[in-house]
Length: 110
Length: 109
Image (cartoon, rainbow over all chains, first blue to last red):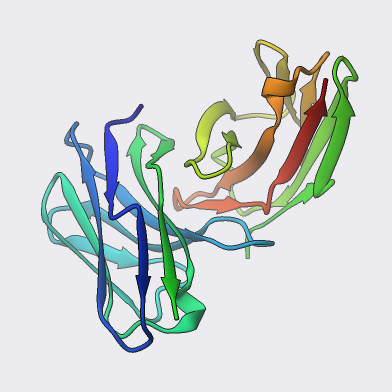
């Protein structure tokens, strides 16, 4: 257990609504990541953070934004959700070179 | 562009029937190759890191090996509790991970 929690664990929303997913860690790790996981694809990096207020884009960042105002929290926001953003979202933290993952949030956009 | 391909997509084994999973990769400046196990509805769980060709790591019935182009995850005498999806990922020189799509292993008693 890497001390990572994600909330909510499940969410159903409608197209066009804003959605925020939260990742919380208890061990003050510097690096945090957001991935999405879809059938037939590997985990794909959306955004990552290397410190408070320091973030950068991953390979599938379009339609997503992130914020990190405290070391322990990393927020992922879908400004206007689309059906293509239906997915399972995982947060991860990095300890030296190894990433450890949270339990995931299943998001359905109708 | 870094690429990771896992095969087969699915593997059905009888309890005790040993087998191997393959992860082939192309990456610029390999820093490490990672294996994870993922159970349904849960996040990936770290298993191994391999850093250089010829390296091997073992954990219970699992053994991971690495060459310059691929990695194998050997499952020896599997049990039903080894049923899971196994994910392979490579870390490039920019420290980012690229994941394969996974191999789903089902072990029947």
